[in-house]
Length: 415
Image 1: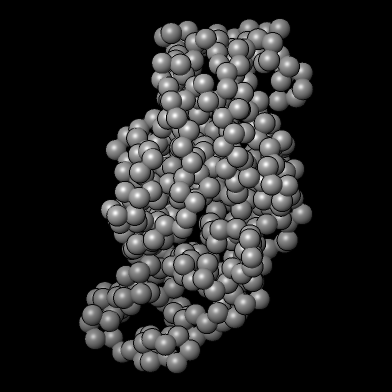
Image 2 (image 1 turned 135 degrees about the vertical axis):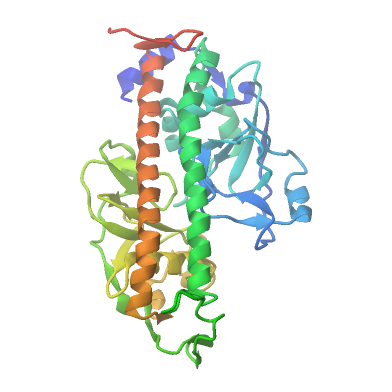
């Protein structure tokens, strides 16, 4: 949205402060949760994807920690959660039935529904008019921008008169996005279970179709891994079975100003669009700064300077991705170092020993999981297209080129 369009919005649309549209704006506890293997979900900034919460990466706390972290406000349906940093200004709406608390760097917005439709507000927060305000906010002057609560309260939100009708229209678009997110969530859970069954319990199908270890498959102790592995498997370093993609020269700020047809991956979870692909086929993308995130994408795409693109060489990329997902807590503890914003130590990670299953097991595993991971990429593309539709529609509504009546019917005008 250029300066002329921004000025048009200011002239045509009443502006309200975010504070005036919310019953309360509640900051998260400034402490690291006491993590559990299962329990009550914790919302973290990388769970915010295209205006919704995506729990492909799940973190949990127990009831005691949940009570502590929700003592000021409990997230309920149609509340909005927004990130203060890394990345700043991404927001999501709380779905019905979710019991969760906030992790760090997040703020909960309790929307006053008599003043603003929550889905409309979510859309307005993602509009260029509001995102420009986020881009100007840098309270610390440091490398990582941090949005303060006073800055958040003072945000100017364009409030169209028919915000309720627009909210209903945006909810239709969002419902499809949510369905795709649920599919992604279920696929991630299933993939994790399959990997653990095959390569943690070692109960992959043997030559007779029986679970290997449970059926008496021969296991041998490995000193490097400090565990037993199937007798005919070998051990190597991670760097021996990966191939690195071209190093990106595209900064995140540049991508935020661009449009295109290819997904652009950053150290944040949000997927932007880019005009030229930098990689093709199935690839793994690891954050090199901030969160130790691991992503998989099958298709042409681009990625930022803070992203490391690799794929399998000697092993299927799908196996390598799920292995990295399995050791993600270890990535955070051993391979991300530094004060403040931590960074991935790639040379150190490349030396990490891993077991190498035999070719037959790897082939069977890839045959099972490759279609599931391809479906994940398809659903990601669908959601990116829905996000593009939403992002196109909002400025058209704000500058008067499109209107929506109470029944949800769209009308187009030219100026």
